[in-house]
Image 1 (cartoon, rainbow, N blue to C red):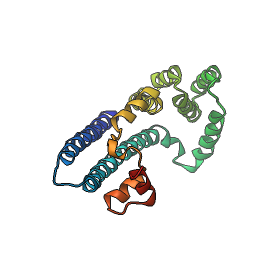
Image 2: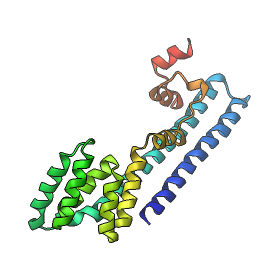
Image 3: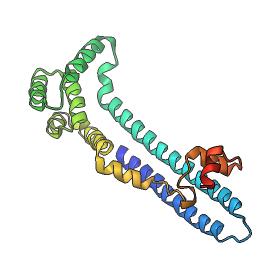
Image 4: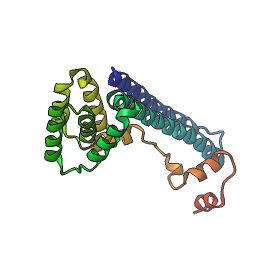
Length: 214
């Protein structure tokens, strides 16, 4: 359920970014073909359109990242938060987190042994800490082993594992870059954001003036 809602949110945000880019393209075409505007006037209107689109897309990107972090935080709290609720278990929880934090990416086999030991002794606190580390490194075998013993948490663990993978996947990150890409008009290609804002506000900076005269 958590990831279904998240996927809907991401799709909606990225569709909005695509629509913003399409609107920019249409509006730029109208500005460029407007014979009543001077060269300076066209530059100003183009800068205004681009700035609005740029800010819209960046806000959509920020909203996606916020949704991802909130969903991840909610899942982590649901799965692991129970072990740090009362003062009695808090010390054990912190100790388990400390032990798990010492596991590096190359310590997968050692982590598997620790998890088996924790399962045998009924040390759910340590098991949860190890699974948390497994999520960081993508140790699917450990996650599945814990899910098999705790079926009620299995779905949430699978969701959290998928979410961690999504956030750390290079291909997904590249796709996000494309979906939230900003198409800077050729008239503004040499300008920084600040220069563009100055042009849009009709207060060109000295640097922008130098570029326009180049």
